[in-house]
Image (cartoon, rainbow, N blue to C red):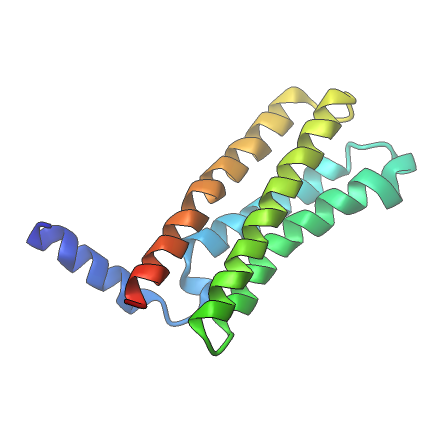
Length: 135
């Protein structure tokens, strides 16, 4: 490993004093906002169905990242990150359903799914780094 990447990693670790310092949390918050806007396009007949499910799953992602960060043990943190990842997969499924039913525009679905993909790469990376720290 080069000295440059070691320094970069040390700086990244030093910056994380709060869950709000985590890029994955910030991206998840952006995704919540995008999903709330997107869900306004879905017919109101889905208020207690798909709209509610999309919003609930989206909110669960940053909420579990934050809650896990506030827990006392690494195991609890990892568990909450795993829950966040599960909620992410649930959200992707709800978004695809909304697309299949033509409730929202294709470009909105694509944008939200790209956000999901980004977070979907970041969460396992964070989990892996945390597990490496424990050894």
